[in-house]
Length: 97
Picture (tube, rainbow, N blue to C red):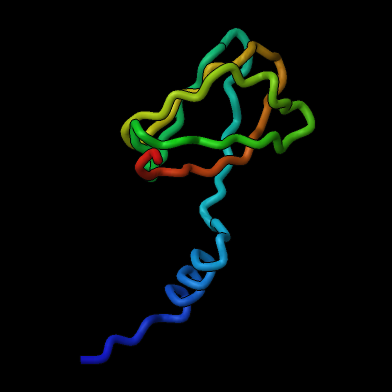
């Protein structure tokens, strides 16, 4: 029995083989006085690693104190700021080595 793979699925498989990740998303931290912000992400689990990267001009790595993954969400603990700070991120999930 032959199963044809759609072009979209073929691209995803090729990207995975090449080590490319297409699941990059964005989040913005809540402004002052907030020091933590929770985001929903169905790809996240309590064993995930969330990797944030600064994206907007006001976003800096030092603003993020800790990222706590949960089931279908993650919480970012951060410094307080009056400015909106936007980050891009990816979620890596798997068994630890």
